[in-house]
Each structure stands twice: as C-alpha cells, then as structure tokens.
Length: 120
Image: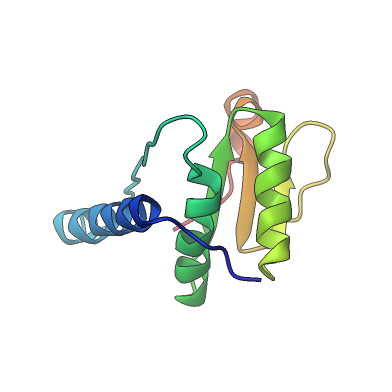
C-alpha cells in the first residue's frame, strides 16, 4: 500500500528533505535534525512515512518521535502497512533495537535518555 498525499504534503516533504540536505552540507560531521510542522489534522504522520521510507532505503536509521500515545501506535501501524519493520519505544512495550526504524514516545525518551535510539 502506498500512501496517497495531497500537494501541500508533497511540498512539506520536499521542504523537510531540503532542510536535511542543506544542514548536511553545513554540518558534514553530522548531528543534525529537522523539525517539520503542519497544522493539526493536516497529515504529518502520513506525510512522514515517505520520508522515513526514503531514508531507510538509503541505509539510514530513523526515529519518529511523538508526544501522544495514539500517534505512536498510528505511526507504527502505518509504517507496518507500508512494509516497514519498526520498533516502538514507549512505556510498557518491549523495544526492538534491531529495527532501523523506531517509533518513540517523547516522554519515554525524556525520562529514559539511555533508550534514545541511534538514528541518522
């Protein structure tokens, strides 16, 4: 199943990818992050999936971080529907460190910094 996206979501994806590209040139040693934002209900989770899949296809490790438990479960299910093997890092769940894609609870990462997944 391939996620169908709206034109504004495609523009958002391009903007986030441009951010990574530009920051990678500025900081070739690494340790960069990009925060993409859209309005509530605009499809950030769905829009992030093609980004995650692209970087995974490049051999990168990715982390999707969300504050709401429902978003974590939704993101993980959407990734699995797209054929992406992903782990979940949140309270009450057994983490799978072998996964190159991790869906993470922000609260868990803040309270357990040792569980922050390695990601590119």
